Image (cartoon, rainbow, N blue to C red; front, side):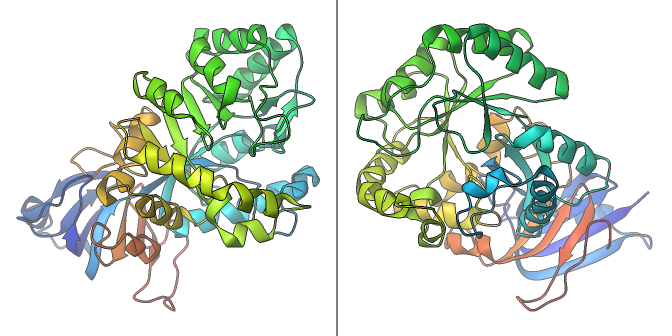
Length: 400
């Protein structure tokens, strides 16, 4: 039996501080056994490893609600690099998963990769062969032949789309991803690239198998069709109208916000062609939509869209748009776990839950930039990272 006591300066259990308790978490094997004073009492034994993190806020491991394992915006022309051979994409995925984990992301939701690469990575991570976040995966993203989706595969016609869904389910997908629109407004606005018949078949096939459906959708007719057909999650939503935000608010559909594609200058530099200029031209309109969304009661969570180890920056953007810090952090902890239907396992610190927790230097509620100062990462009870400063040593998964 592996017993650990993690002691910090503050304890943020998930939407609440345990300010009247010592900042302590007692872990037995993969599970949290106790918090606060109860943790200290339970740990009074010679066979307990103690990890002291006096200047750190202990909090739940972070959840990236939208990423792509083999997508790396640090590379020039990174979208076009999705055409690289599968072995190269796989090596890239191995690197990005480790970067994410060391940044505090203990769980991630992958919205598609080439050739079921993400499904294989999920299995390898679960078996302890590959360090990285625990994964929920979509398999192949489904796009129209003439539609957007650098990470997707092309399918056309209701029966072809139905077959794509079935193949994803057979391969082990946890959700189905479909691309209904592009990412920026074009000369023809925001056309929807799938027909109603195709979308209804896709949703029906996924739901009959018990899988949720997510769609890359920035607004326009594609959004209206997504809500009408019962799609469960809208990804991005950059150009939603006020009436569409109100419709989303009145529905049970989730929205995943990924602001970095428009607001990370670093990311814009590695886009190909004239895409940087187009994103800059449309940035102000997207900012207005983000401001409206975060002030609404829409069920929203947060992802990086492959901006690996950049989840803290996404939160900073959203707080800049007017989101309350605790609400934004819920989008990568408690509410993120709700989206994934994993709230009994992850997203907050409580007895019996999986021991996924991090230590950040500072108070993330008072200063969300603390989320970028991750000093400790514990995943499933295993110490992944322990460092006293930015120049401290790292420990790979499984070491303590």
